[in-house]
Length: 383
Image 1 (spheres, one colour):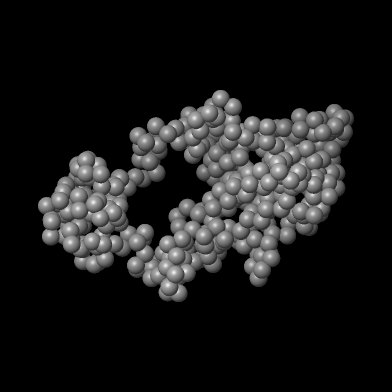
Image 2 (tube, helix red, strand yellow):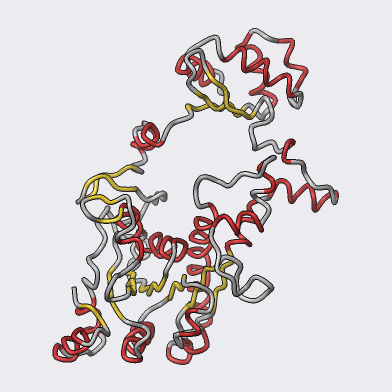
């Protein structure tokens, strides 16, 4: 089956995780992604430890399916080839430090002058404009400023995965495809401005709903998603292994109480009393985890094992969905989307630095002699 985004041409110029991640999602779905890299060292993730067979492990996943075009964008000749590539592309994913594109002469107005149909997508911590608009950022700054860290409890906690980068990548892919659909109707490109702080702030849907409705700020201790409440928490079994319980519906709570032989707990729904959680903790310590999970599934009570990363990669459902897939260079990450009439690309490894420079620029009109001369002068790298 053809991939959903077959025929879409994307240029990526990124120095961090969000832009590269966004372009990776588009590449997984079939877009041809030309990743612009610095000729001498390439992308920062290429050599970032830990390494697999001499290659950065993150790079192996993040840059699979992409085409590497190594250009020095500080050189006017490198910028000219970049602009020619933009002229023949549908979208640009720009994920550099705020202000970097402007310093290179590659801001949206400047690129639009050459490629008016191009969708120019920027992903940054705080977006364009505003008091933080020009600041560099990392996940810790973004989730803190957006309110997620503060809502995690006392003391505040930072998510163990880069939630801001993930939100930027997802919103970036959505923004790119939305703008391309608008272009289909209007014929013109546009600038899509993605702020990761906006994405994290919007993810606080439940506490924001309370605040918008009542003007009251939800307490982190009352956060129903933080594990403080008896019906939505993590519990240890007889052997010290953990399981997750999500009995948030009244019928699930009643089924749990019946399973435990504790009908006296049924009137306590919703179970807001902290002492009730200790009661459940004592009950769950009476049996092994797998036995609990079988009994809970029989009664349709939402539950699951608390897997380590190794266990999650071997989880039967993960394997069934092919999220831990076999690629040409060993185990790799699957694509988290399924289609009935199309298919994401089969796993493929990342490109060598500059592997596609020659082919790409020859397609734009460069001669063999010109490319060899530019390579000697450090303007580009031929893989």
